[in-house]
Every structure is written in structure tokens, then in C-alpha cells.
Image 1 (cartoon, rainbow, N blue to C red):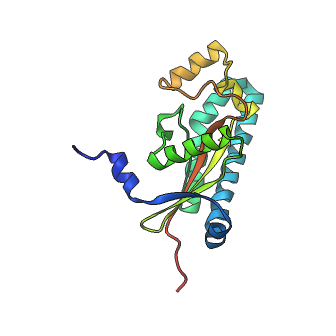
Image 2 (cartoon, helix red, strand yellow):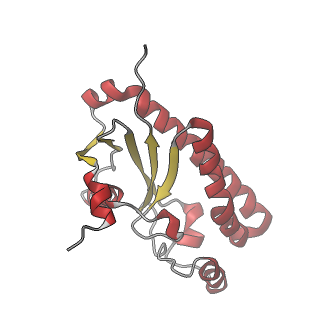
Length: 192
């Protein structure tokens, strides 16, 4: 039996993913701060574009922002910073955002934390090569409900399905874990 690509990729990760605690924060505070800043910039830029689109053309225009602008924002931030930033979820609209094995595991942990009544904690992991990964949960917000909620207009959903024929990112309730931001940073360089 051949090992799956997912299994091979997952095996390159160090076998732990941990919540961000005090000891971990101290030893990786620069990387955590960089990841949090990237997420804040991505979230802020995307939210701004979505608000503008909704004001100009309603939810239909917001679909275009998520389809065209969100990947460009992520790509721009990634290029400027020499890192990778994006979004993922267990139920995706864009198939390019499917989670890898580690991301799936963390998304399931976020959901479990939410079910247990706690706020999902940020998670970090280290690859064998010393690179750093960071995930932060995305909670379902009111602005997102018109396209991802339980009551989506039929005409709007038909347009969504035209762009995203394999869409499963629907039926979320407010404050559900909608997905997560994912940041990957290269190996931390040591000063000479």
C-alpha cells in the first residue's frame, strides 16, 4: 500500500501542535507577533473590501471580493513578508483552501474547544526544518451570514454555486468556528 501524500506531508511536521502558552510565547514571541500582525492586516483588508462591496452592490458583489480579492490580499501580504498566509476550513467554498492534515486536526480542536464552551486558542507547530506555522480560529460574523449562514437567498446561492460548484461553506450560525487563518513562516534566522 502506497502512503498518501497527506501522510507524507504530515510526517514532516514535528508531532505536536500546541496552544500558545506562556513558555511557548516567550520562546517564539517574535514569530507569534509577526503571525498575529499578518492575520490582523489580512483580516482588516478583507473586511474593508467586503464592507465596500456590500455597500456598492450587496452580497453579490461580496462574492466577487471573496473570489478575486481575498486571494490577492493573501498573495500580496505573503510576497511582501516572505511568508505564506491564507484561510482554511473543514467546509470550504474555494477548493484551494482545503486544509492539510495538521490544519484539519487543529480545526477539529477549535471546534471541540468551542463545543466545550471555551474560546479556541491559537495553535502553533514547528516543522523539522525549523519553520513555524500558526493558526487562529475565525468565528462566524454577522457580515458573513448572508453568504455562509443558515438562510441564504436562493438567487444568491445559485450565483455562489456557479463560481464554487463544490461549495460546502454554508449553514453556519453566528459565532460558529467558520475556519481559520493560517500563517507559515520560514526558519528563524540566527544573527551572525
